[in-house]
Image (cartoon, rainbow over all chains, first blue to last red):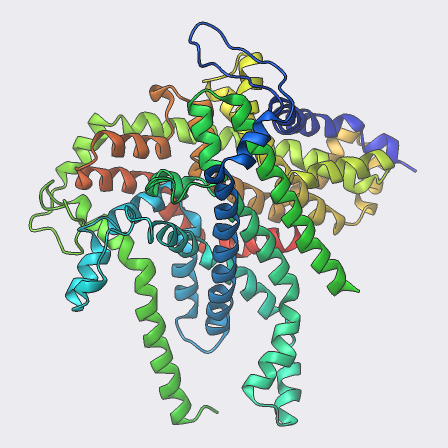
Amino acid sequence: MYNKKIYKRYFTLPAVFLYTLLFMVPVILNFVYSFTNWNAIKMTHETARFIGLDNYIKIFQNKELASVILRTLVFAGVTTIFKNVIGFLLALAFNEGLKTKNILRAIFFLPAMLSPLIIGLIFGSIFMKAGFANQLLTSLGLQNLTRAWLTSKDTALGTAMFVEIWRQVGFNMVIYLAGLQLIDKSYYEAASVDGANKRQQLFSITLPRMIPSLIINLLLALSQGLKAFDIVFVLTGGGPSGATELINTLVFKEFGKKLYGMSSAYGVILFLITAAAGLLVLRIKDNNDE
Amino acid sequence: MKTKHEKIRLAVKEVLFWLLSLIVIVPFLIVIFNAFKTKPEAINMQLTLPEVWHFENFKQVWDQGSILNSLVNSLIISITSVVVTVVASAMCAYVISRNRTKENRFIYLYFAMGLMVPVSMVSIVKVLRVIHLYNTLLGSILVFVALILPLSVFLYYGFITGIPKELDEAAVIDGAGALRIFTQVVFPLLKPATVTVIMINFLNVWNDFQIPLYTLPDPDKAVIVQKVYNFYGTYTASWNLVSVTILFAILPILIVYIFGQRYIISGMVAGSVKG
């Protein structure tokens, strides 16, 4: 009954105002701009004319541009799978037993605390032609495996994905650890009394209870993968010859070329894909909740 | 009781995971070692100790790179945007969580959208130009606030739901006004959530490169992460000096991490599990 008196409406205004002005208005503007040829190619003035779907037609007719979208999906999909599988295995290992598990957790979580750009820079040096990766292979007698990881077309994308996985696997681990710690120990005790072995316990007790953690991790990893920018920007800049170009690096490139309309169109495509991915994961969640 | 066999198995497992952790540790060792080397010694970023430890590299980078300037810029941007976000999101989440009107329900969903939606940098730049805040620290701060608000509102919303509403009502009977109830009764109780919100957002803002890249092109206003990138662009072959800038950029984070590791991990987990 005191609701009106205590919970003043103006309390919400600063947050709603700033969020609207600098997040949601730009999202809507982006849709609008994507139907224009807004650009500043001529230094003297900017032009913007409504051109309907031309930007999108251009994107989908050009094979290379369309393959950027596919590549972004692959990047997000592959990194999501590895982050989750490795993250879960690490969580199982560091859940209990090991004496130094707390230090090991902290070590594996450390990369998630640091700037992706800086991590990209460090791995840029590790994967240069004479860098540590190849030094290591040579010292192990595997000279024939050495290659120019970031400048050859076959390996550049894989290397960038490796770095993204390395960066975030600890974060996924920590979320799974939190999930594991919520499981009541008595389940395992009862199961071992009944004679269930470790593997049976994993499949019938642990895994089903990991679904909430899995859903959080999927949502975060997919959206990180789809929006990936810094790492690829600094590792390869989208090269060699477009082999690692993702939607967000292209958004920046078009922006740099002052083709703002085109840049916005890519932004809209990213928006739609991210929204679709998010809805898909939430759908899985709802099915699971029932 | 653990059998001897089991103890050995655990010890082997322990060693194996420490070996595995080298994948994480070695890249940092490479940066640390090479930061103390000469330019030719660091050319291939080898995992070797420097022949002579060149501490003067740090002074050279500090002077040439105006590191202090960028650290200050990073601190101003991170602290201000986190403080503004804490205040704005706590107040907002408090009201929409306590008073579940249709309108407040909508505000909640409106913020939830922001958790997934990618930011539209091109249009953000346009808006900043219109309000004359493009290429200013204040402009970047406000952009950061807008982008980190959704998660913060979410975290506070979840936390406030667990605090009994009777507290507010008792305070109002004692004659306290809305603002006083919030600042003196409710906000202090939100401390665990506030710690999480501060940590997550501070890290995200400090580490971000994309927003300053679009909104702060002026090199004098560069934040530390931008500075590292610019330095790398200028001194491409001088990996020793680039390593030093990297250390300058990650040292503050490392120090905070070493001391607050427990809070950070559990805070981030609590945050994302609830969100």
